[in-house]
View 1: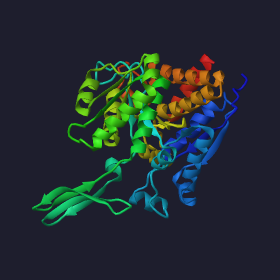
View 2: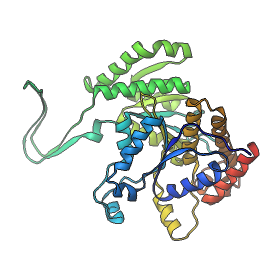
View 3: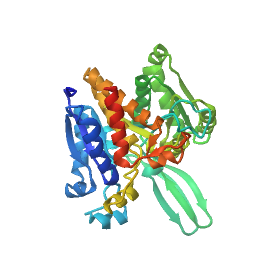
Length: 402
């Protein structure tokens, strides 16, 4: 068959460890035989990040601004052990954090729903898309130990010398204190990304904070979301038959547990960190979770929601067989290819992405799957495949569809 042509490149960000191995398998077996793949390649493997002093990560993010759509493999965020293992010059920041900051993006994560992998929450019938505000809060905090009696104050000094003080706590004994912040512009970008993505995917938006307790910090989130919705999105939502719903975070959690899904759950940074793991685990597996970074300017970066699968990589290096789930990485590619097709009016490319996803799910529903899914499936007597054979089984199904 004639290969599908692409007019605009995708930004391709390669990664680390077992996901890097899967990345090549996916390209060789599921993409290159069918698409004249047009990508601008960046190696975000830890060795090359070290070689370039992490400039390659910045370059990849800037290229995403240029071309609008990127696909990213999972990457290592080094700790002290990784510094020794890879002989690093320094402990580099998270590539995802660097890219998010440059693109000013919001991360949307959604489970991949497939027959035979039923959610733990019985009433969840549709995916719940988790939108995490990936800036500020506890992740950019300042902390200190208090080792003797005294007072901790929050102090703001303006550029013209004006000073404001608020007492945090009079310490009579040892303890701990923390200061954290957020930026109005970042909250505004978060809100716009959520509402734009809702219109793009035809989903309602739910947002929860704790403004009854945090009457300034969380109240600012509530105010910004409501103002932007009312002034920029209310009419568009009504035309699309969509709704925006705000409540306290504890009420939202209770409602989510009783809902059937099919909406975007917008969360502050810490809430999103915790709840995304809850949602992915309850739907079955973190390896069955998509992730897309969306900026208010309309940049998209797709990746799997999981890490580099270090344990399987070490087995691979020993020459041992692995059964690594590649579904989320496949869906990162399909998401990027579909979006590229939409932006370029390349229906053939978008249709291919749809068929590859369908072939992947059909393979699992036929009982052919990796070991992690075989442990939780309701399908009787599943066939457990190794990493490569699972991808080859998907290719066989895809060729039937094409």
